[in-house]
Amino acid sequence: MVYIAGDNVITSLGFSTAENIRKISENVCGITRSDDKRISRTPVPVALVDSDRLEKEFAKIPSKKQYTRLEKLAILSIRDALLGSGVDPSDKRTGIIFSTTKGNIDLLDPDMASRYEDHRIHLWSAAHEIQQQIGNPNTPIVISNACISGSLAVLVGQRLINNGKFDHVIVAGADIMSEFIISGFQSFQAVSEEPCKPFDKGRSGITIGEGAGTIILTTDPPNGKKNSRITVMGGGTSNDANHISGPSRTGDGLYFAINMALAEAGLQAEKIDYISAHGTGTGYNDEMEAKAIAWASLERKPVNIFKGYIGHTLGAAGIIESVYAFESMIGNLLFPSMGFTNLGVSKDLNIIKTLEQAPLHFCLKLASGFGGCNAAVIYRKE
Amino acid sequence: MEGCYISRSCSIIGTKVLVDGQTDFNTEQVVDFNTFIKSVYKHYKIGFLKFYKMDNLSKLAFLTSEILLMGSGLQQKYSPEDTGIVLINSSSTLETDNRYYLTIKDKSNYFPSPAVFVYTLPNIMVGEIAIRNKIMGENITFVAEKYDPQFLYEYVSLLMNEKIKRCICGWVEFERTGSCYESLIYLVEKDDITNRNIKFDASFLEKNYLDLKA
Image (cartoon, rainbow over all chains, first blue to last red):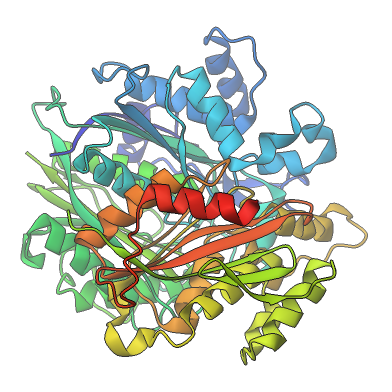
């Protein structure tokens, strides 16, 4: 059995899980319009982590080394998640997995790069700095698999624990805002002019966010929050085998991943209480996801998408949104999908519009990304 | 857990293509990657025009997989979700990242292209192989400083045990400056279909890689 022993999220909404959940409960949106020319040539909605606060929080950590923005986010996130988790990062039986799409992408700029070693732009190098700073003895396992990286990292952690390689795994993910990412999604005409509206009729694309998230996995039953314990029951990944930059038109790949997750969890679809969807807010993604959800006989289950609060946090998204889902399960709360008003997909999904209470035991987390990749993870509250 | 077997391996390194450790094609003289990889594409008569749109990392991974799977009847024997893909590399897509960065760095000459941007994710090479062969099973891209045969063995073994029946797995590295490239991909199956008794284990993968680099 793989339990969640601790977690943290750092996003535009705050620096801890509790702070994030409080803001979500108060309907606070972390997306703002930026006219920073270093990010985009034209003003664009983005979800940014407060830089002054990041420096202030990081200054509390005794450290002589110079760290990048990405590394600071990840280090702070892991350190906070470890507090009270009962997991010792210096234990040889504690593994570390780091998920990111672009890592220290800001170091492509020669001025930025000159402040660090040449290899620091490599994803493994950033992960190494993070692992060293938190005092972990193991070589970090780095996953860079587009927008499903975070969900995959949780699954790999669960599998390595089940396989006996580790007793505990620190699963952390982070990605930072950059002109690189914004211009790339703009070139696809996939960036929304307004804060993203996943699954809504008026949706017009992605809002990019930044952030970090950490989930501490363990075989030891932890003392749960509010006497609830969350476990990772199972999951699966698949590929659409259809197109590198567009999702399947039928949802078949994601449907396979959901089926794999249900099979490993030993559950019928009927048992799922709640779905945390990927919901990028693009026409194609949301439609594909809706088809897969309906195909898996989950059409009427409550669904929400957190990207309307914090944007798409890329390689951290699967971790951050899973942590939000844990809080939903623990509090028996269904949070509304920020930005959603009218259903804009072909299946009659039950998208959550207002804060509701419901007994939640089994949650399905979905993710899909470029390269045709899909992931599904099932969490249980006991 | 039952062991798995290596049905075939393919590697592209320097001026050579090796199949099962034996040189299968060699351009002899050292040329730039672009010229070399096109000569490989032509030599093996790979008719797939999308190849020319790929970035260098994907070209390397794609051609290695094409030569690996020649005559393997991948689609006949297994359903799409029975085959998985697991690739590891070191430099992620840094060579293409640099290429993309040049298109946005100069504000007077700003021309970001989606066709370049999409290749700034290392799992795109996995997607290319999946599309070509209609592979829909478990797939993942890891990034590690060095090729790690032990980890590859462990992760592929656990997938083979629980999730898939066949795996295309290995190492595909295209260094940031393009000065170094190497691939080594295996076709791993549960049965020893070639009757060669080549067991999929970490020490074999390690030795295989060292032989390649020797």
